[in-house]
Length: 349
Image 1: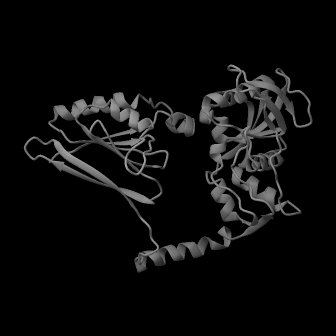
Image 2: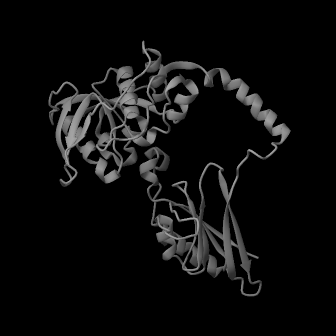
């Protein structure tokens, strides 16, 4: 029995990866791509078609309240498409849309999709389908002894680095943002980046912060979990207008930048220019035509997350890896870290 597979990725891909990774690659509408290749498969006599989509969606456990991009895609795909695997937002989804299965099993191996298809051998059509999201809890499973030994050996090799204590904190540093969009972990990381480069301003994207730092001892392994991408820090020259443009791009991207060395206020009810005031941390106005040294990671510097304004930066200099900057900054602290949100970002209304 012939089964056709079509793979698509989210059209958001160019904004969530380094632009150099997708250079010269065109991203078209997922539904149009699915229907184009479903037509080709049907010409070959294939009537059972599976789509592997890196597009988000969710549903309740009983399949109700389904929504998301993959849900929208499924409503408009060729009737010969029988089911779609979703992804990207690491959620649960198990529902039917126009008779087609749409499933997603969380992420990182915490569950898997167990899909059943009943195919008529004469018509080659799917006549019945269902799916189950199966959790992969390991606490009651006896691991394979050889595989466990391999993992134990590897963990022993990296343990001295992973468990190395580099500092301590009396308060947790988290990604939780205030109503204005600022977090104490974002403040701390950008402070570390600015200190490592001696730039006037440091900016980082919230997507580059992948975990929180708990209170108590801070290990190198914990910091690696926070910043695992090994992005290079880049210092560049931007004028005040370019900085303002980048800040105003936040509301189009839906991502609030974390900052150090400057302050600003904004009104969410305004049009495309929501920034009301913009100063350095000492209150000095950031002038449109004046040049400022700004540090950010290589992802942002190349326009990642939709911040195209940063690609206009001049005199770019690569400094060091962002994780190293964070580790060294913590090691230099003479007292346990106690950081609260600094109110560098103020939402007026």
